[in-house]
Amino acid sequence: MKNTKEKEHYIKLIFKHREKNQRVTVSSLSENLGVSKSSVTNMLKKLVHMGLVDTAPYQPIALTDKGVVVAQEIVAKHRLIELFLVEVMGFTNEQVHPIAEEIEHIDSPEFFRRVREMLKQDQLDPHGSTIPEIKF
Image (cartoon, rainbow, N blue to C red):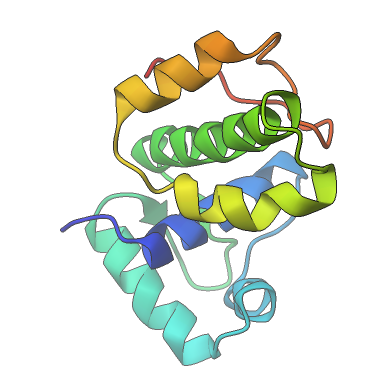
């Protein structure tokens, strides 16, 4: 099964909750993504089938080891792009999120390697969040 933007948004959101030590539930995903609980449940079934997420009744939703790796790559791409847009292209912090939301889904390791090389630093995004260390 192929990753899609929608699946990647779920994985990224679960990862961000994990970064903040927040419990991830169907309700929290539904609220954050603006979709119904049944839509969340259907997507979670797909993510479990892909080996990216673990779910159990009355337990928080968790990323598998494989899911963590995928999430770190998506988050690293997003945060690197935000940093690139601010440092290199002169965008403001407020402008970069929607652009990075689109670019993070590009499957081009060479592109992201070159973005990283052009940056003065690659540890923190313009909002102060840590950029996961990923080999592209």
